[in-house]
Image (cartoon, rainbow, N blue to C red; front, side, top):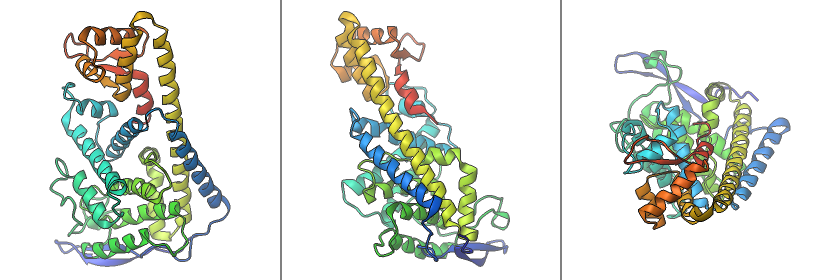
Length: 386
């Protein structure tokens, strides 16, 4: 359904006197209401079904906390890559280790700040029982831009100047979000929408609409894309649709970037919420299925590798303990293995040697000292898409 523009254009002037048409979105929900029928209703039901299956699979994980630890880092890598960083999941995991020097620090440090922002938001929602609000969004933004690139772009504060997307200046930009004097009111309206319980909208619909609205408002000088993607995770968590934060859309959005930006613009110019929601529901379905498959693949791989180790003779006991250490972190040095397992140097060395011989672990530095071992199959499953 095409409703016409979902906001109004306001003419404003830049500091050089150039007149610009900035877009000020109307508050949500849209009018007329979204038509839930036909293919859109089918897409919604399939997304809900996929979320339910993911929630069920997560119960079977041998160590859910560890799975979340790595899945959150994978999301941070993908979300940061969309913004231009080159850090991989392997880079991030090595950067986090004190005994794995030589990893380029800039992009990895930026990705780690995305991890900190995501974990801060989830902790506030779950442990502190803090409401999903503009205050929390600003807190998360402050964590995201606490250091490095963007740290001079008002971390934790809504912008107080005009921004634009695409082009070399506001006058030739692809899109100009609302002037800064409207940001506070727009974000207050978005917060009211997040907590509304009288409009009949299902939570997944509210989440899809809220993401578009935040991207349209573009409330910060920098980091809006990452905050918009984090908002999806926070809303899924706070709505109770998932018992654990296992769904992250960055890979889907990265793989469908052109369609994503086109649909955002179609909502703004023509009010076609149905087309955007169909795309969003498909992303939720695809991503939930992939996350469930990843969980099942990891579980099956770990069990198969344990069985193989058990059949490997007298070194099996040490190797099983080293294997458990590699499950906890798929990049390990001998010293870190000793610390985790409590084995002596000879025991840890013998255990990892056996894992190398049967193809479970691989040494990746080529050095005679400060060697680092990777649980290759484990990391390759987690690395998909990055």
